[in-house]
Image (cartoon, rainbow, N blue to C red):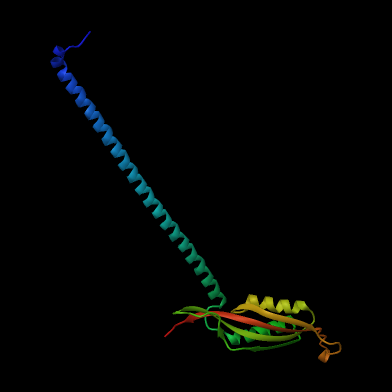
Length: 199
């Protein structure tokens, strides 16, 4: 069947409808593509915002854990008496108690003035140390180890041994039948933490 020019007026309405439908279809596709791009942009923005919130949440949780750990350490140090002014009288009493308990032969000590271990720019807590020179006569090295262990466990301060020199006493130098074999010269830092307020 052949179409002629006479058939065009009859097909005009159908052709117009087809062109209109093609235009509507193309417009729908264009709108759908635009909506898809907008949806993808919105999804990427939402994902970015979610990632940002996740990062903030992780930082908050990390800071919370750090605060809990520091709080636990602070409570431990406070319970042990490390936080606060140094208690020299208690330290001296503790040394006498350990000397008697461990039956140490001769224990002599001298405590130097307290000094700061770090500088504090503003107000806050700072570490301070008092160096104690200890000299004692020993039957054997284990007496020294027991003394240091006792100090670390019982002292109201952090005990940091800076140096310890142990030398053998000359033969026949045992005074009063003490049977001391060794002489120990130690420097021990008694570290405390207390608040500093800058004026």
